[in-house]
Length: 500
Image (cartoon, rainbow, N blue to C red):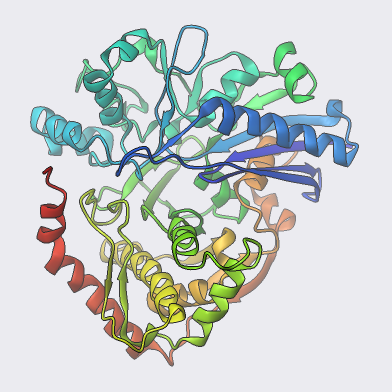
């Protein structure tokens, strides 16, 4: 019997699966952790506690509960939250907490300074992406400007996946898909690191070695084997960002295929025939040589449901809170009785790229209930997703097939509102466990035990969320107000962001 281990480090939870050669899940495990917000606009993880200890715990738990012998695991695949910055010393030990992806907006000054010095057009042409809160380069520069002693001690700048791979294999590697988020340090045409745009951000020896996702990064070392329970010598693939692994897990393969991931953020990936150049979106080489992908993402999505529960449903037991809130939202009518919600609680990523954007609840009156407000929150996220889909359509890339995945798909109001407002049908696969399943599949592909097209038999389509026409007029009005509300309050949002 052959097995494949997949582990994904998410914003709030680490999940792992152990899969057999037919794609059946033999064991799964999860461990929660927190996103630290030490200041407004900052978002951090603790790499030792939230990443490595999680990986060890879920791996050992799956091996123990399944009875699977570690020697039968043919390969290990890991994914993790998107472009992060973790400075480590010469021994690979973290020097600070990790700065997270686009939800962390601390480097706004560095973005402006780099655009002024290099030129926004030059950055976009060379790197394929505008500098935004999602970009790694400005965050490294922030460390140099604000933590100079720490910066001087940094031997490598890693992301979450490359840190786990280093702990497993001793090597410092990163896949091209992840590296493309390192603007202005990655040249999309050359598909290589570049230092001629800003040679003061990082030295060549401080960045990991570039690999493709299914390349073998190394083998599990004896020390890592002793910690994790894995067999020494087990191959470890380069891996990738969680959203990309999740897209693979639900069958995104051909041009026009799109994934909508309902997680702590909404994230979309669409495979395209060639490079997509639009400042409102992100571009990266896809996981495999010669292929391309276009991405988009909201800054806060599932995170908002946690915030709402913690602030306005404290009387509900933790195990029942989300189900109860979803039931209350379902009793409110489409359009949330006239409420419109802007979900920009951590600024916003695509397509507006505005770190100063703010959350707004608009249209309140004395008749509104908690259910109305929670429904408005879910529909606000759905409107943000529709804005992304509208952007793809504007540039002539309408999605052909849409696959939905993630914990948010279990919230019927949220998922159905997304289909209705975007006028999209969303297919759901049988297994929606997420990126960890994609990691296991990629591991099987890497060692030649599966072909990419086998995902259709590993994980067949289960059902479809069809767009409904009967609420189109209500949602068209709501979406119009959603778009205009941001435009008319943008300057006020920026004013609130000015220091006292």
